[in-house]
Amino acid sequence: MSKLTKIEIEEALEDTRSIFEEEVFKEYFLRSIKKNPVTGWLTSSPDLKTKAEFLKRDEDGDYAEETLDAMWFGWKLASENTLKGLAEAMNVKVE
Image (cartoon, rainbow, N blue to C red; front, side, top):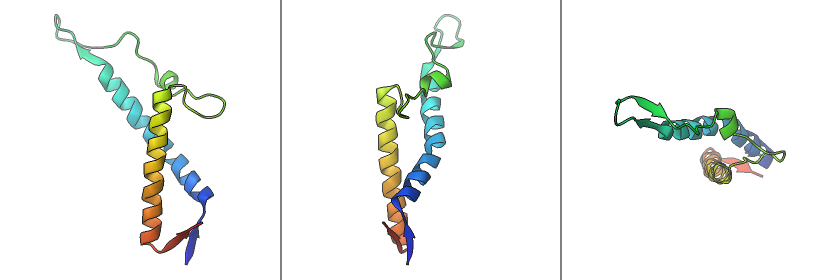
């Protein structure tokens, strides 16, 4: 029986961080776009943050935005459960 360690799971989850960041920034950016009722043009919010500002992390690696940090926690939890389920289905022991 193959083995999968908690460290390997953490590394796999960290590998998905870029996907998570792309998705949450895309959603943030798209929600900032509004149609100007007078001109009909699409405009973005004047207080729109850059991707770097939006995804800023502190020295511990946590996101500065608490809601973003909470979403990352949820993303990791769901991904970890998925990985463990796949490992179980493939008869791989998780240590």
